[in-house]
Image 1 (tube, one colour):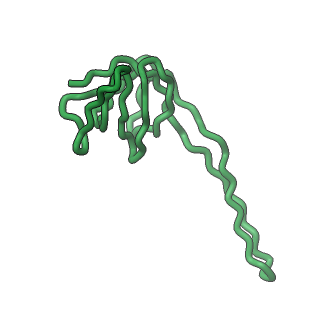
Image 2: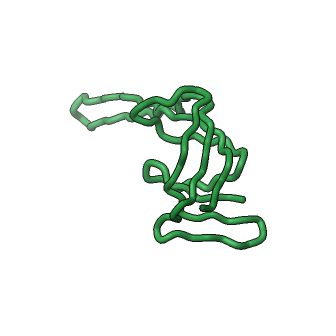
Image 3: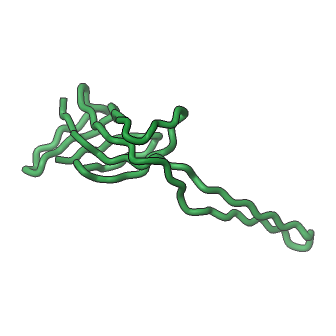
Length: 107
């Protein structure tokens, strides 16, 4: 069984047992706690049947267990203007929450 969920403006296809990274929340969840994704766009089974929401499926949810907090790869931004002697370099590392997908309920 699979589900397509929306989290922070991104659509993610998940199956039971998958380990994914989602954007960090305002309140940082602790390791071992659970997250519930209730914005489910579609739920499908292995036999070809699928339920598609308009835009969300009512009553459908995906439960996940928080594994921990991680950082993404470093992104380097370099600015340069010719003949002016202007060079600027900055970097950024996005913080993520790693979760393991548990039960998918179709509602």
